[in-house]
View 1 (cartoon, protein in one colour):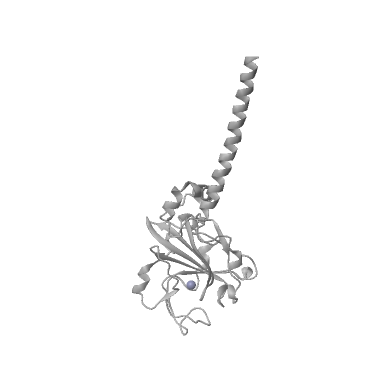
View 2: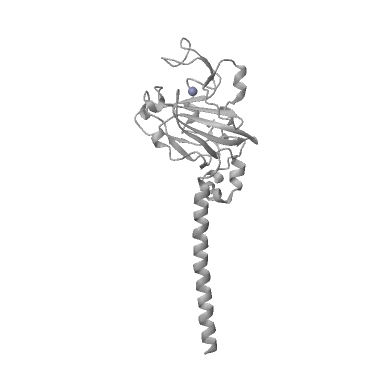
Length: 242
Ligand SMILES: [Zn+2]
């Protein structure tokens, strides 16, 4: 009889523990969910990776891709073939641009990835080139839809601007974690408000430091030092096979 009572008690304690565990896990998950949206935009990728609440968000992405903080992954398929008009640093003006009509002048702070004819009416997905926190999503004059992400590159903070996106296709908001290779959204429709009147393409710029800089062109070649040319930094797996 005594044994029976004890066993019942053990079962009761065991059951209570398991109920307690479930509640604890639920509370933990709720805390994680609430802290996810509370991540300050200025937090660096390294700090985010150390936060237990964000680890799950990051683990599903490209940690397995072998991408280090010293190289970027391609933002689009066949990225190398797409840089045909405005590479990083090119000087353009309305009279000398490879794009017509041209409304900008100056040295190009980013790299332009063009779209193929069959993609003009198709969804063209854009991927993150590095792992880090989303700092901004929204509409910016000259670009249309923009997402800006902060990453570490060669142990230094950089902000990556992805321009000419369809704002309706951006699932992430400021503070969200985003892994290298992770889905950002779709390119905006050419010559629409989604691209602020530009052709359908991706403008990709990597600015040094944590401060956001929206400039697509700068007036002097010296001012380009504030930006990094992303092209030679792409992972070797993205280079064309010889
Ligand atoms: Zn551009």
